[in-house]
Image 1 (cartoon, rainbow, N blue to C red):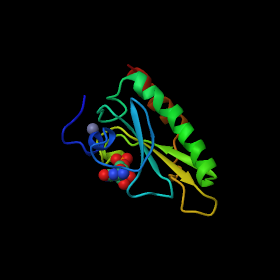
Image 2 (image 1 turned 90 degrees about the vertical axis):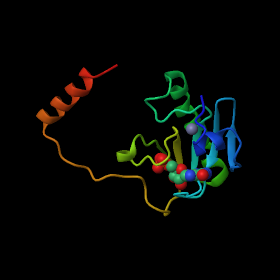
Image 3 (image 1 turned 180 degrees about the horizontal axis):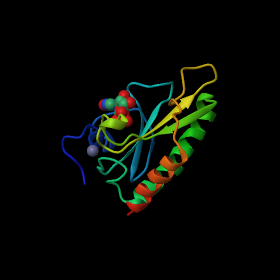
Image 4 (image 1 turned 90 degrees about the horizontal axis):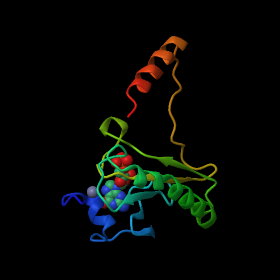
Length: 139
Ligand code: 5GP
Ligand code: ZN
């Protein structure tokens, strides 16, 4: 399950060298080449999935515990004060490499900004209607 043209497949398999911070049979965790902060890491499954919806649930279920362990190591090893776990699905969500990956971004007090968004407004009826649409589409 690998895509011959995918850069993250090549990195995950070790065909292209990377700054690896963790590796096991299923995952490689590397440092991002364009880090948002010192230590910005990417969790790459060794199998190719284009995004979280494409991955089997067993694989997807291992990502969050791994992100927590990496974040804890960043706090201990790099002195990070906190960290963001970010995962983009689709170009509209900012995904630029279409091989599933999870960003673990250490944050330092007084350092560059957090991943954030502008809170919007939604009427209660709108929330009810929106929730219903998602609920009806559950698989
Ligand atoms: P996305 O926007 O798809 O969620 O994130 C892709 C990330 O991969 C970006 O933060 C980008 O800096 C990083 N990236 C892209 N190409 C490479 C590469 O060849 N090596 C490494 N280590 N990171 C990369
Ligand atoms: Zn791939």
